[in-house]
Amino acid sequence: MTTYDNQVKAAFISALESACRTGELPPCDLPADVPLERPKQETMGDLATPISMQLAKVMHQSPLAIANAIVKHLPALDMVSQVEVVKPGYINLRYSPTWLVDQVLAILDAPDTFGNVSLGQGEQVQVEFVSANPTGPLHVGAARNAVLGDAIARVLEAAGYSVQREYYVNDAGSRVRLFGESLYARYAQALGQDISMPEDGYQGQYMVDMAAEIISQHGDEYLRMEREEAVLALGAEGLNRVIAAAKDDLSFMGICYDRWFSEASLYTEGTFDRITSILSNGNHLERHDGAVWFKATELGGGKDEVVVRSDGTPGYFASDIAYHYDKFTLRGFQRVIDVWGADHQGHVPRMKAMMQALGLDPERLTIILYQLVTLKRGGEVVRLSKRTGDMITLREVLEEVGPDAVRFFLLARAADSQMDFDLDLAKEQSDVNPVYYVQYAHARTSSILRFAGELDYTKGDLSLLTTDSEQALIRRMIRLPEVITTAAEHLAPHHLTYYAQDLAAALHTFYRDCRVVNPEPGAEALSLARLKLVAACRIAIARTLHLMGMTSPDIM
Image (cartoon, rainbow, N blue to C red; front, side, top):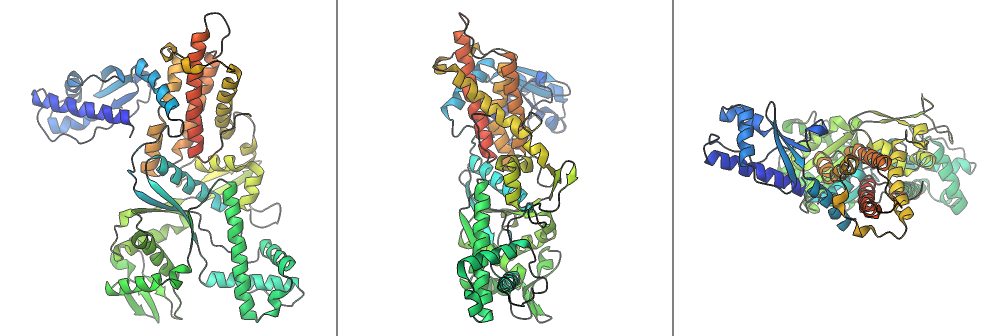
């Protein structure tokens, strides 16, 4: 919530208390908060509250009567020039034009932090995202996970949280073993050995390519080892290469992690042994069918889960329990956000059950589920890579349309919405492409400021900004703190894409309606004021692009 919204809320609470003291409203338990919203039509004002309608049943008065009593006692606010009661009981407010233009100075004074709010109060949050199995290159399906996770982290940081980004590396278990065996087979085949691929092995062209790369660097070194030793060594070599490639792909998108966490460390460092002891002491484990099971159904889970298989190896869920114990108990995160594909929906109840079994508040764990993305080109669904004939990698899409387009398009819908990604549209250099439209707005502000040359806009008198287009642009700019608050509270960074387009539209309209640099005699004062507005708008657009992880081009 923005500082000025808090001021408005406090003024309404004060008015309610005053009206109750004077007897104009009946005494009752007053709300601790006052809802604020934006009228659907801007002609109705800048802010509105339905508080009168919410209190009507409690106070046994009409919403209009309550609203009029509140307005009568509403203290004066510098930011408000007009207060109006509207049927059936809304109280609408309009910003003062003087206050509005003063916000331009506030933006110019905080170019790197404009829009930031103190919602989080420094609370420690971990966002774990992507975390794809390190058994092959990141495919395009990981792109939405990456974009969503990083944008959530950026928004939370802007909202005052202390955020750690983490990638969970699944470097333990049967899939890693199968990866090593598959790579050994491709390696040996490339060296003329008659060795078949394991059943359910990794068949992609990338395995053939990786084997060839290893041969170019190590020759037949691994064939001179015992097979078991070679499988383990090649598996480790392959995992390192896959992880390095993932880091490179994600870095290309501007995504960096604070930590790459090894699943294997949960077993080598004793975390798994610790959680099995905790669960056993809490009577959350039982043995049957030769395996050890977590009794998830007793805590609301859909079904019980294997913790230790009948062969003595840990089950998949064992790592989930140990990993989250490490997050919450050993590292002390107050809140954890996991970004998972929608196919993991059935795992959410067991994760909540796991939290209860470990003595942790399930509300501290949030799991964001996102729907898959369909790639399209020329209206047709794209399923296979042009390059290799199999999976479409993240790198291919990044190289074709660029990281900025990937970020914006994959952020443009709520996580639980299915979406199509139009590759042709993403490359379009026109206003029909929202990425181009928004970034061109930033480039336009830069162009205007360059054209102004040595004109010193810091001397601009903002009180001269009185036209509808000028005021509308400022209104869009000062909404950024509100957008950040909404995105952080709901973990919904797609709101940024809508705001970015709205802000860009306001800038383009202003540019159409208002000549910024006017060389005519007597026009310099207004030119300086408008340049000041353009400089502030440039900051607002750049901050919005940054929150989406995108670049802010000065020339397009």
